[in-house]
Length: 149
Image 1 (cartoon, rainbow, N blue to C red):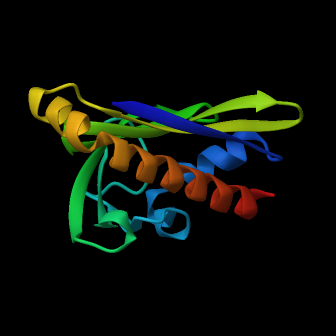
Image 2 (cartoon, rainbow, N blue to C red; image 1 turned 45 degrees about the horizontal axis):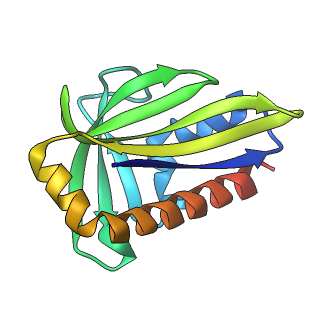
């Protein structure tokens, strides 16, 4: 109920982190989330800040808003957010950055919360959603790479 994709980028971790932690730019990179906005007066990332993303599932629909909370905010290293209620997310998405060979290995990851309902969902449909998630993560990372290199 988790997966990740890693791509090397010829850019410093700080440059990439500034981009992935600015949720207002997510629409430039994600094939599913086409816009996002900070909530509650927040103007940038910090653990506990909330934002909402506008999602077009699988790039075709349905289209909906989802609320997220930042769960990890380590400049130059990691940015992650939980989807759903703060402290009880349905899943967590994020980026880990590792300096490598004069650039950065960037890993996008997701992990579903291991509830009974999500375990059943993953058992029945996980093969399809997992493939979609991997493809989407690769697309997102390739678009980020194009922006920072």
